[in-house]
Length: 191
Ligand SMILES: N[C@@H](CCC(=O)N[C@@H](CS)C(=O)NCC(=O)O)C(=O)O
Ligand SMILES: [Zn+2]
Ligand SMILES: [Zn+2]
Image 1: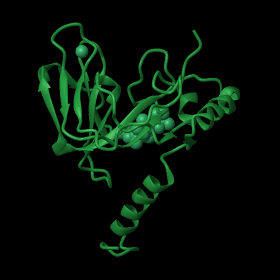
Image 2 (image 1 turned 45 degrees about the vertical axis):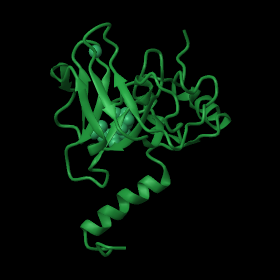
Image 3 (image 1 turned 120 degrees about the vertical axis):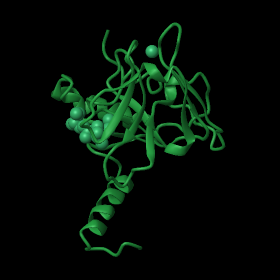
């Protein structure tokens, strides 16, 4: 079967509810599921083509959003979680049994520290913020996608109304650059 972008993108995007209160994520195990409770909606939800983010079967992209760390708690079977790569900036906590990534936490000094990364498709509930853009699009080539088919991938995102970037969106890249300039003393700490 030809790979799809992602199940939440293949048939058009469903708008979320701006007042969505949150919900519970669960892993794919048939029993003893790991659950993670989120007490708010996510922000900056987007498709990510990088090789590190968890993608559902046969999908080229992950969909990942952020939530403040204090709005996230592991609500069952925490002992089944393991960190995929301790050396990564984002430590991704995955279920040992089914492999699903339940959340990613930033472990280094980073402008997004304090935010966790989550996949809202792991919840049964609707209403989460819809994807806003596609990031790390060229990275799907690193996963083995043919480079000469990239125009079609970018076209499909545009048809869905999503802009494509090969890193993050300009506002997020501006935030990262601003933090770097502040750290280097080239911009004042308070802007
Ligand atoms: N081209 C690389 C990009 C990896 C990458 O930089 N991913 C981004 C988006 S999730 C990131 O911020 N990663 C930090 C991390 O994984 O710790 C790949 O596909 O592996
Ligand atoms: Zn599991
Ligand atoms: Zn990623």
